[in-house]
Length: 425
Ligand code: DOR
Ligand code: ZN
Image (cartoon, rainbow, N blue to C red; front, side, top):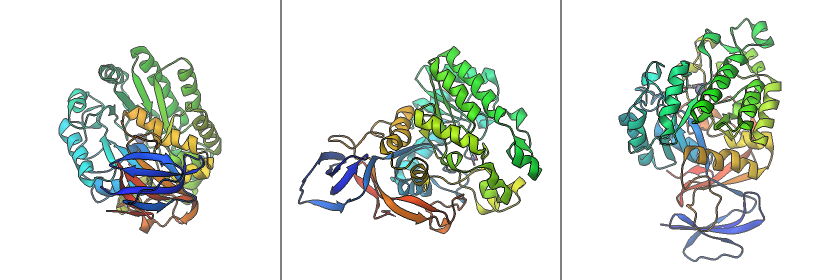
């Protein structure tokens, strides 16, 4: 195994120092390190972060390998600075059995670019009618701990209660896509001024807030862990704030796009901006940013949702919702929060690793810890060219935008998956 001596690096924003990686772990962090056998990486001006962890990635395999595969999505993740991703269950077939989650887990191991932790479906076929084999998925080689019907809401309160009860036994988490389906029938975008003007059916904020309010009460009643996917409204933040103040075991995520883009993007009728939940208002964005900084929202998760060209480049009403996220998330975080490295490490690595129970991830580089880390050049600026992305899909909402920051290298257990900004394999 090659050793790597990373020189002049700022560890999570600290003073420049040297960092030695050997045998898969961080062997030393201090000034003036030397190691004859090590490959030297000059990291002057770079910041080392614990490898990023994404709690919400759609890898599309099995079933839609034209849009993404475990391998292509893993490569996109590594290039984005990630060392672990949680793969959502809305594949085809759905990841609702031990067999499918083990398949995804094995494909992740074979790709070897990030750790792929499968999420299991809550209900059979995501149909919202009966519980999937949660225990069998938990006991499988994939060791599933997070369950989600993402893409769909577990709308039936009795099923939601049962799911929360079931996972309590092994400290599992139910990750809810909060969308009261009766309030979003036919919805195309955020319900507000812009939807009224464009004549598109609206997706009201209350459809999200009502489910979160219900689910924090259920989680409180059962004493189980709830995670709320892609929080998008100021009202949701207030519900979460109250629940957390009461000690409910709830965590929440926000996506990069909900921190940056507003519903005004729909005026272009470009379906690249169609996403679920929809882009909201500037006031929502302000509340989400504040909540993330405070910790009312715990993490940034990408909701990386690759879609094939025919599913995106069509009329708005027919387009699938979703946006790419893995290769741009850190840049958006830098754009929104600036070089607040500790906040970025907390919200994009340490806390998501803790929620997902991923040992060895989300730990700052220090002697003896597994060398899962990424090197960022905060001074670099790059123009996003969809054709240059590693994802098999092209549906980035940031096409041709200039964004701050560039991932220079990513290490997974001491092996580089990205070097000089390029994927190693
Ligand atoms: O925009 C979205 N896309 N939201 C979801 O909940 C699902 C996802 C997908 O699978 O494409
Ligand atoms: Zn979702």
